[in-house]
Length: 636
Image (tube, rainbow, N blue to C red; front, side, top):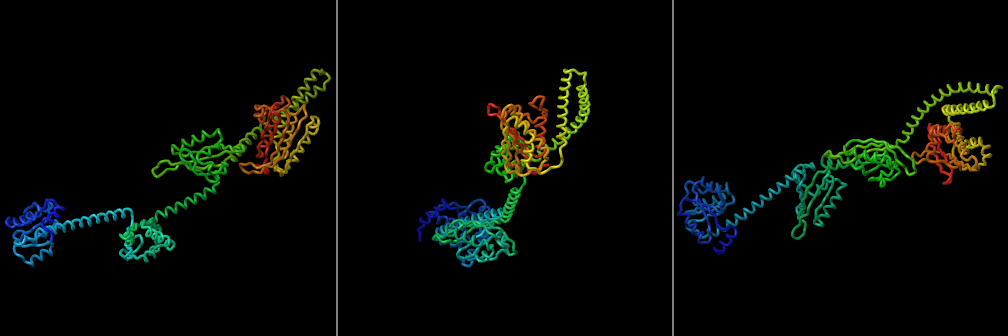
């Protein structure tokens, strides 16, 4: 048995001074008890109470290490005192000191919660009983604190899990039983309290997910690590729920698995949303891929992050080349700043944007584009970027231009008819008068000369009116004609001039199909081009080159025929070349009407074709080349 001093040493480890609450009304009974404690080396402070009210106040006002109760208090029987102590301070040891030992009374108190009892005339055991009860009380208090902390921790976990809709589960390896909380039972659709064995749980998992989940759990057990498992749970009612489960493995001291504890969350709504998003994205990609218009996505600074195949086709660029600011490489230089500034301004204001601009393709062709974009916003209402469309409107603009030209030409044609009607009749009368004057014997030679000049000028006026009318009175019937035949028939008209001017003709005719055209109009164009070429080579031998080619334009893939007439004349200045297709512009002085190339250009445009001219001065080699293309099937 340890000595009193040893006991004191152990007590002093838990408290510096013993705090004793005496339930007694006689100092003579308290003094011997204090003497024994002091003799045993137990320093203490104390307080004496003798009524229930005093006891309640003492317990409420201070923390006591032990309560020592005598049996002589009339107003506060020991059993009543014990009940009060157990009610207000259940962890404090309660000792009974009796005048005479009554085992039955003492047993009643012990059963009610008293720790021990001693007789007043035998207090030898008192220090050891005090030490024992203090140690027991300390252990009990520590255990209660631990249990309280554990309950608080578990409650916090339950609250957090409930707030996050998490179910808590554990798998006891030794018992081979899975423990679920209420949330797990609710998600699985199983009555709460059902014993969950691994076999039952396995049967709830979707057959396609069982192996994958089992392998993840086995690997976590093997490595003693955390397991992350995503699987489907099939409820008894047939409903399927997606579950995301995290579990941590806990080991015994010998390294064997003790249990696995984890949380599970129902992610069905998230899975459904993700599947819907994937389906939506797939639909968008499919629609975007087959869209007849170009589609793009960009940030607020006009940096493109996505394009569909149609936009890449319009731009004649692949997506990596377009991304970022790469798309601007195709924009016509005159339209870049207008497009980018307008787009950026609209994006910063969060408004939609529409614009027409031009693309300049690698082959030099210009295409007209109609673009529109709109800003999209995040959940906070802040602009995130733009999404938009582009459409190639070149054909529409050409059709509109053709319509405007047709309307203009219709007005000019009406005017020409009026002019022809108003001019030709007087011209005929004037011509007759000049003829009569020329045949008169009274007119001298000088006057005859003036009359011949007047006749020449009248013929020139008549020619201008006739050419204008001829252009506007074209045939409405198209015929499929071989271009080579048209060239040869037009060339035959100049056989005498070719011979006189010593002009060599070079033909380079590819095998081209017959084209649907107004043959007389195209022959008029060829005659005009051949006549201009021979005029350019007048006074010196030269070479006339004629070429036929079948071509396909890069923009619309239209099958076309290209006809080229080239001469070796002195060429022309840039200023002249820029105006040769203007009405009434001529370099031939009084000999030219200025309508030939203008009429030719209008005829080609009405057929859906294009006419181009290249020329260089003699010091650079000289020569003029005029080419025009016609669709195999007329646009009209």
